[in-house]
Length: 75
Image 1: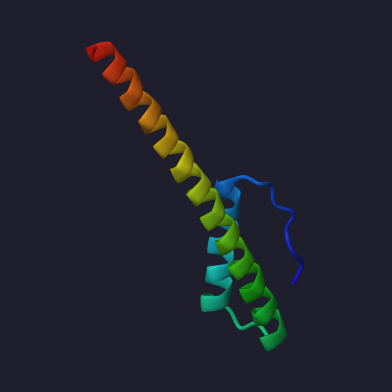
Image 2 (image 1 turned 135 degrees about the vertical axis):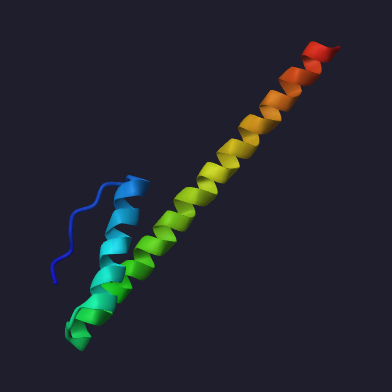
């Protein structure tokens, strides 16, 4: 199995993860290829989780900033 070149784009990683899931669930592939796909899937899952965690932190900072702005406007 050849690995596809992926961007750092979350959506691209998610699409590739779905492709891997489908391949593992729906095809007759050998053990070695299955393990390689599984390893790639685990790596992509970690990368997606990291991206989501960073996005959550950014949203929390923005919400805090917005709250501070709203508090200043009320004073």
